[in-house]
Amino acid sequence: MLTVSGLTKAFGGFIAVNNVSFSVGKGEILGLLGPNGSGKSTTFNCIAGMLKPTAGSVKLDGDEIAGLTADATCRRGIGRTFQIPRPFRELSLLENATLAAHFGSDGHLRHDEAEAVARDALELAQLPTDPGAQVRGLGAAGLKKLELARALATRPKLLLADESLGGLDAAEMRQAADMLKRIRDERGITIVWVEHIMGVLLSVVDRVVVLDHGAVIFEGTPREAQEDEKVAEVYLGPPETRAA
Ligand SMILES: Nc1ncnc2c1ncn2[C@@H]1O[C@H](COP(=O)(O)OP(=O)(O)OP(=O)(O)O)[C@@H](O)[C@H]1O
Image 1 (cartoon, rainbow, N blue to C red):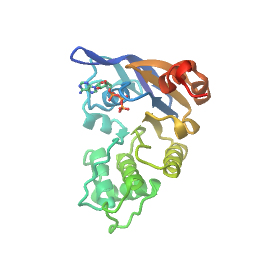
Image 2: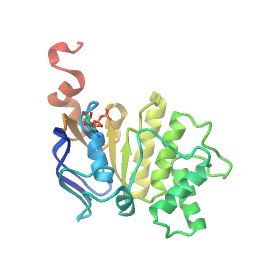
Image 3: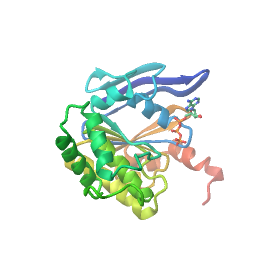
Image 4: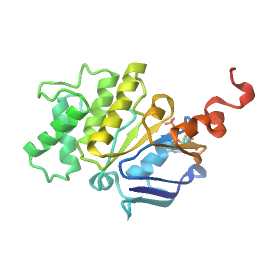
């Protein structure tokens, strides 16, 4: 469904993403991993239209989308969450999700239709749907859920989830991972999940791509990733420096 080929992004003379290629099949959950600064967000932003690639191709169901704006990629069916949630804090949860539903439909939904889509998205993210439920008072996990609900309300076929585990405790991480899996299992939504920590992600994703210094250093199953020496080196350092 998504094919990234030779994706390159330079900031001046610095190449943040260097000739990156991978693909994601329909209904798959792909984990895009790598340490801080390895180029994950830049790759993600080139796919979602927040950045224009310097070179390369991004195809969604065979159509070239590299260089399209973020609005255009959203309307093609790419929904994304942001690492740092920035909801409209003065609006209710339902209003936040309804706005996202309107945005995702490019204004083609009636308000009651957008609200129905929003309720469904909030339910999927396990948030209250009553109009009185407010953003204030939500903790880190609640804000991450709202971020997910807003992305789902745009009715994506491909969900790009950015650092969904940041700031969560172990139980909340497990819940966040299970939620992404359920979204794929129940709705068939394809997911690219960007994360710098491997942990719980490996128990949920079908395949893993690991970036380091802007390049793909590994692609394979979660089990293969756990056994791969290059991946271990990137995450744990050279063998001689690791604790026994
Ligand atoms: N707008 C920019 N201008 C210049 N350099 C940038 C810009 N955005 C990112 N970079 C650099 O590109 C490299 C890759 O950054 P990127 O944010 O994609 O990494 P990341 O893997 O997502 O890291 P993190 O896990 O910390 O979010 C880093 O060295 C970063 O400093």
